[in-house]
Length: 618
Image 1 (cartoon, rainbow, N blue to C red):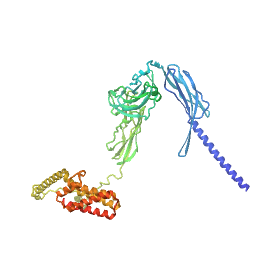
Image 2 (cartoon, helix red, strand yellow):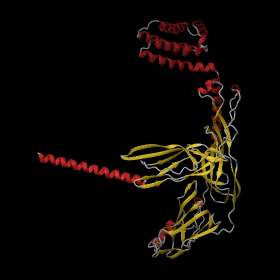
Image 3 (cartoon, rainbow, N blue to C red):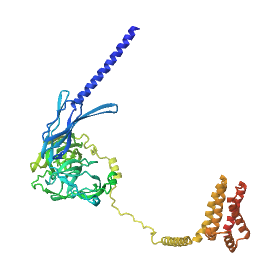
Image 4 (tube, rainbow, N blue to C red):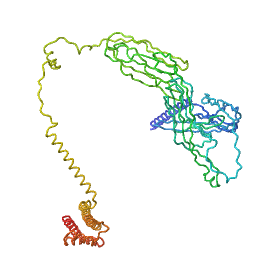
């Protein structure tokens, strides 16, 4: 028993030790991976004013204690460093990731104008030192503080503008204003605000870039404002759109303005203490702004372009040309692959021309565009795969493939040429199998005669055709019948239109149909035992039928005028009394206790009989 207990304890110690070892290895791996990914970054505004206080934040994705701050010469350290730590653990699909960030925050104050460099800070992690990149901060002259108006408060009026008109504006910034045709340039649409009082945007109209091939490279869903120096003043600027443009025409091309309506929060003088307390001392003012028209001078390319030039403009172009196979058989498909790499209008590059041997058939080019468009321009590669089929055997040499582009840096045409392409074409083993003729026999000639008809040399036997249907008596009879049917249809439709216009006649004809529908409804109520609904629907059927038949409005219909009108139409007195008796019983039963089912059925049958008699005589 003691031996078994010792064995179990030894196993537990072994498994526990193995788990601890695995955890230690995992921790060491995480630490090593973290050490390899350590980075130190700095965040600070790019533009500040003299005597303005701002924050400089140094962030490192590790837990460190030995942080060495940079040289703050040119700035006064108002406060700092204040340290903050942030840890985040994520578990995605069973995989755990741990992120830790340590920040050191300083509050600085600019001392003098100019470009002041904030030096590099450093941290040590696992006996390895990491440094941040130096940051250059532009310090501009501070604006004079506006003097407070010494006017009585009751004379203050709500603001109707936004200051001097320069607190919010937009620009289109182009990277180049003088380019060659086909040379790319970037256009950045930016908005500037001095007071960050933009509440929203309306009626946005982007330029159309007439004369340019344009592609959008940046369209932020949310504007990210950064400080920027504009004519000695600090503005908060944000990129609205960024485009890459390729001019397709020469001359002075104008870029249309970018127009937008901004909803600005303008602070007004409060009329009472309650306005300021409840936050109603600001109002929304809409301001329509537009950027100035930008002119780009596009120069034509030199006229001495080689024959292999197809419009490529840029720098650093390279070309490779090769055959997918250097040995094929006749009538077998192969392909030539040309790859062009560079920076410029790669998307607009066309396939270079190849001088194929006479017996080569070529087909449509397959194009693979692997270029990337960014704010820095267009770069990457474009591949052309040209299928071809050689029709005869032999060894063929394809001349070097030439590709010419205009180099922007050198301002001249540069021609690239590949090596000659050699291909060996063997004989087609199936060549001529379908057309080989070993001899001619009678059976072959007989089959040929059945397949291809010989030209007849004798005259055909013409037969006289019988009389045509056109112009025959039957033809005119059918036309007369069609005209007669048309006239009858017109008369019928005309009579029907007149009958429909006669409201009395229409009501008279529809009286029986409407009465039947209501009687059917009353019959369903009778079966369900709904006595009030039965008597009400039966009364509506009787009075409605009489109103439609006698052309008397339901509101004007009564027992007296109904009796008088029926007597004038020669209706027997017994039928009149029967009808009015049924009406009276319905009216009485609506306001009296419900009768038996037998009584309700009798009244229902009497109503149907009364309407049937009237339908025969009215």
